[in-house]
Image 1 (cartoon, rainbow, N blue to C red):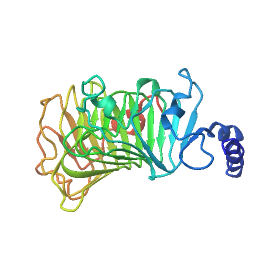
Image 2: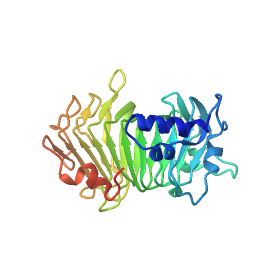
Image 3: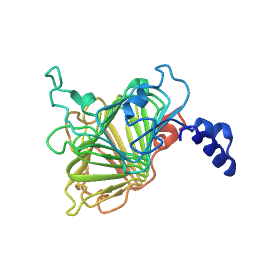
Image 4: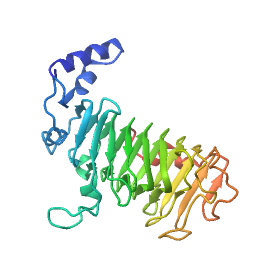
Length: 314
C-alpha cells in the first residue's frame, strides 16, 4: 500500500494542477492502523522511526481507529494526518496520578499527545485528541512546547486543562475544543480561526500566562457554544505573567457571564483581555469588568493573523 501512495498522489496532483514533487513530499512515511496496508499499529513507533535530525517533511497517516496511550511527538517537520473524527488519539490519566517513581506524572505525562520543543514545524490534522479522565483533575488532551505547530480540522476533548500551550506559536484552523475549567491555557502565542469552543460545564475558557510583549491567545471568528442549560462560564482568568486573550468577531453563546472575565493570580493593569466586534447573546458589554476592553469596533491591526504569527506564514 505504501509503495502505491506516491504514484497515486502524483496523479492526483497532476489532475489538479499540482506537481509530482509536491505530491511525493506529501506521501506517507508510515501508515499506522488496524487495517490492511498499514506498516504497523503503533503511532509512537512510527514517530520513533523518524531520525532525530529530520529535516524533510514526513507524513504519518493514521487509519480510523483508537490509539491509546501517552504519545510524544519529538521529531521536527512531522505531519500526523488522521482519517477524520474516528481517528482517536486518547489517554485517560490526570496529572496528579503517580507514575513509576511514585511522583505525579505532571501535565507532560498526562497528555494524550505531547509535542516537545524538538517537534517544531508539526502539522496535526483530521483527527481527535482526547483525555477521557473526566472531572476532578487536570488532564490534558494535548500539550505543546514547540514552535510553529498547526492544527487543522481537529477535535480536542477534555474537561480541565484540555489544551496546554506552553511555549512557541500555534495556529488552530476549524478545530473543535471542549472543556470546562481553564481548558485553553499556557504561555504560548496561538491564533484560533473559525474554531468552535464548547463549554461542557461552568468554568473558564482561557487561562493565559503570556510573557510581556507577546500577543497570547487570539480567537478570530470563532463560536463559543454550550450544552442545554448554558452553564455560566467566564471567557477567562489571568494565570501568570502579563496574560493576554482577545476575542475578535466571535459568536458568544448565552452561557457567557455578563462580567465576562474574572480576577485571579494577576491584577490589572498587567492583564490584557479584550473583545472586538463580538456578537451573540453572550456578547453584551454592559456589565463587563472595567479592566477588560470591550468594543463593537474592529480590532487593532496587531491582532491579525500575520501580525500575531510574525515571520511564520503557515
